[in-house]
Every structure is written in C-alpha cells, then in structure tokens.
Image (cartoon, rainbow, N blue to C red; front, side, top):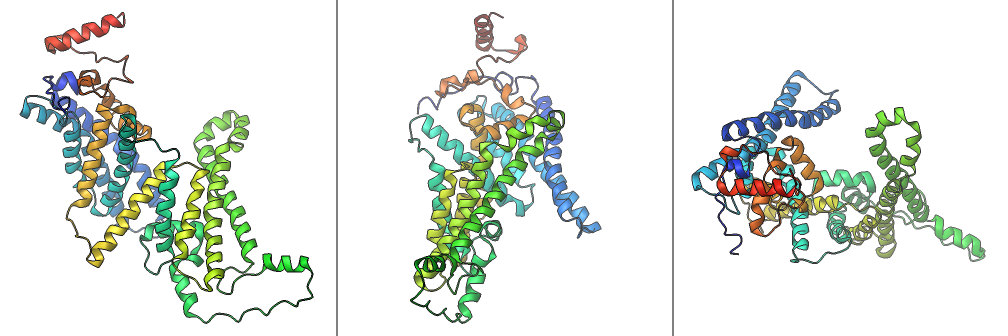
Length: 453
C-alpha cells in the first residue's frame, strides 16, 4: 500500500507528453490526430451501415446517418484528446502525480466528457465492449501478480455457463436479448426459438406413427431408428439425418467464413503471388472454425430433439442442456473475447429483466459509469502495466494517438512496483534538456550512457 501512495514530483512534460513541452500544444495535437483517426474508423462503420440501408435511404435518413457519424467521431476524438488534457490539469492542480492521476483518473474523466457526446442508444454497446476488454486485462494482471491462478482454456467454462442461460431464453417466449436471439437464430434456426415452440405446443400433436410390423429384419429396424423423428420435431427428415446434416452445413459455413476473413485482406498480396492462396485454404484455423460452428449448431439442435423424445414435448428447459453441450464447441476455436462479450451481454439482459420485474433497482447513469470505469482502467493499464493490456486494444490506442500513447516515460513509474518499463527498455524520450529537473536529467544521462549513445 505504501508503494501505491508514492508521490511523483515530475512535470507533465517529463512523464506524459514527452514529445512536446507545451500542455496546450500537445493536447491540440492529440485532438487533431484522434479526430482524423476517428473519422477513418467510424467512416468504415457508417459506410457499411449506409450500404445496408441503401434501398430504404431517404434524404432525412441520410442526414441522420451523417449526423450520427460526426457525433461518434467526436466522441472518440474527445476520449483521446481529453485524456492528455485532464492529465495536465490534474498535474497543475495537485502539483504532483500519484498512482491514480498517472493515468486512471485522466482516462476516467476523459470518458465522462466523451460518453455524454455519444448517442444514448450506442452507450450500452460501448460499455459492454470496453468492460469486456477490461475484464480480460484485469484477469491477466491478477494472474501475472499471483492474485489468481491461470485456468487453461477457461473461456470454455465461461462460454458453457453463458450458453446455458442463453439457450434457455432462446427457447423461451420472452427472449433475453433481441440482438443475441437474432445471432443465435443464424446457428440454431427459427424453428427452435421460443415463439415457434409456443405455436407447436398450442397446436394438437400429430397422430403417432403406427408400430412397425414385428417381422421386420434387424437392418430394417436399425434404419427405422435412424430415419424416424418425433411428432413435435420441426424438421422434415429423421432426427439423426437432421443432426448430421446440420453438422455438415455448419462446418462448411464456419470453414468458408474463416477463409473469407483471411483471403479478403490478402487480395493485393494474392494478386501478386497466387501461390499463397493454397496455404490460406489449408490453414488449421479454417478447420477449427468449421468444427466450432458444426458442433455448436448440431449439438444444440440434437439435444433439443432428445428432449422432445424424452419428455414428449418441447420445453424451454431443454435449452439449458442444449446450450451447455453447444458451448463445448469453444474447445475447437478459442475465442475468449466472444465468451466474455456474451457473458456481459447476458448479465446486462438479466439485470434488465430484474429491473422490469421490480427485483433490482434501476440505477441512473450506470451504463455511463461502467464505460468510464472500464475505459479509465484500460488507460491505466496501458501506462502502468502495458504488457497485460489486450494486444488489439493496445494497437487501437496506438492508432488513435499515432503512437503518442507509447511515448509516455514509463521508466519513471517503476517505483510503483509494476515494472512499467518492461517492453520499453530501449526507449527514452528525446527531451529538451533545459526543461528537465535535475533528477530526470540525471536519469536521462544514465540511460544514454547504458545504451552507449
């Protein structure tokens, strides 16, 4: 605790915006950079949205789309430029830098300003996303410093538990989340959804097929087992052929989708070197993606068939076991980000249901607070303990600031015990020596001497 309470006497220039001595100029520079990158990032997103809505596009909807695009770009821009601005303001107000104000508090306050600019309907999505990334980074930090034990393939447990809940609500008349239900319908089909189950349970069951004559051979009896289906099953063929057909169709979808993800960004290289296409096609990742979708779809549908045979009717509770078995598909295709995202979306849906039922309080501003808290932690990790930050988010911060985020002098933070300089051993800011304190000037000389510069 005494380590975290250390006070750092460094200036903003010595620790934070090491590329530019002026607080105002460095903040303005980040503002311009982040706005350019924000426009590019959200330009792709809103362009795709516009193409999808092209047929229904009107002048008014076009104006709204442009307004939303500029608003989202300003949101991301403010999150970047206000970070360095609040860092400087806190340094001048407190006359020092501490463990909280080194990065967490600037990130938190910048997020407060930014999230209020973004459209309210997009805030929950943003909050879930950054909370997802923050959870992964927090877990990595806890494992790194011995506060938690690493669980090999722990994302499978998360995915299985999440799918047990989602499987139940998918087959329920009151879905947990329309967005998730739409995504699951792509894998499971609408026939297994709660709405279709209710309609089948209301309609009278078809007359059972009469028993086969006793004189059938064992081959005919075996074929009958594989070709018949329960009267409540929505598919036309037998349950076993339906299971196998779903698996084959799922494998082809997963394989082709993963292949497209690899081929599309590589088209310029493939035009110059067509021979590189074959290794992309034969990649193990394509097979794993195919196995994931095949298992995920087939075992959910197959388990629902077993439930109908066992109980004689459709029940939402069949989705619990079906979801658990389907969740084991993550063994073939490790995706912790997907598992965590679905987990947080499930918590969000359960919380909303609890609020609607009156069991839980509706907390005003909870979405915004969650976003600010998670983003503040991610900025904190990016500076204090960068090696435990998710690589994709680290790349995002680097792009948003044109690598200015990584010109922070992390060596001066080693006193907090996180070895913040790891990964930046060969970097020391090119300071203007006349603006440095005696201590930082000495550290600069020692660093240059150690590197024989």
